Image (cartoon, rainbow, N blue to C red):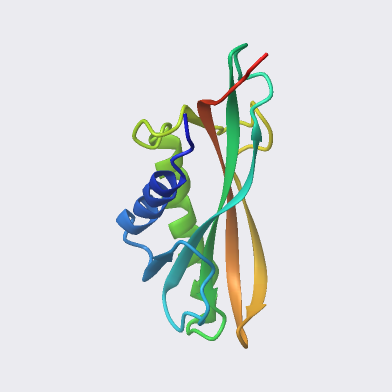
Length: 152
């Protein structure tokens, strides 16, 4: 079995786009800063065996994605930046919890961290391309069953 990464990434991007909270959803970090609204980006962070989740003939994997939400720091009202980002973040976390298999593409979203770090988000700031952003980075761990054959 081969990892269908394009389909998985597309499903995660579609979740974000369907929420209605984002002006753009990219499969990469944005090059130019958003001037208004919230932008999201999705990319692969890590992949490896799902310890304790594999059988004797094949290896299941833990595929960790990052989903980063960006908002420009030069927006008014400034007091709305965090609440707007948190509202969008809440919608995504609910989507990942509610569509536990991303439409059957993965065995599960590792919500509670059975195979490593759980679904989580961290707030921060990012300076890129001459602009400053307020960001929330979601660690989205996905478990993909029986990805690699084990040969004795």
